[in-house]
Length: 139
Image (tube, rainbow, N blue to C red; front, side, top):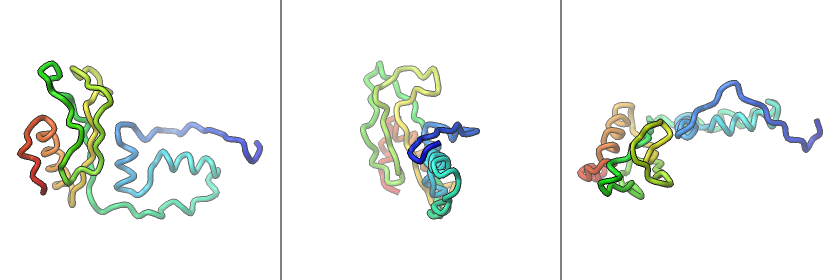
């Protein structure tokens, strides 16, 4: 193997999709996908960057939000005004019925000062997403 040669190795497991790497990055301070590539690229010799970010003491969670009644004129909100949302990404194209886990209308990550607060924010987010705009009050 030469010094400019790229070698790709398969990881023994994957971190998951649909926001799992971003969730780990926010809470633990590192992106597992990026860490896997960095460790493989340095062959594990340079680990000084590991643990450089302490992560967060806040609680994070995310939802893959199911679409509403597309036939009835429902549209995915382009953005959310809720203060506790730290990442919101509407899907590129609206989808009708959810017949597999890959069909979702939007991804949203929330934060809270505790697990209970984060769970309450997830519940509020879901109500907001499906039309309950009384959740627009900033908490």
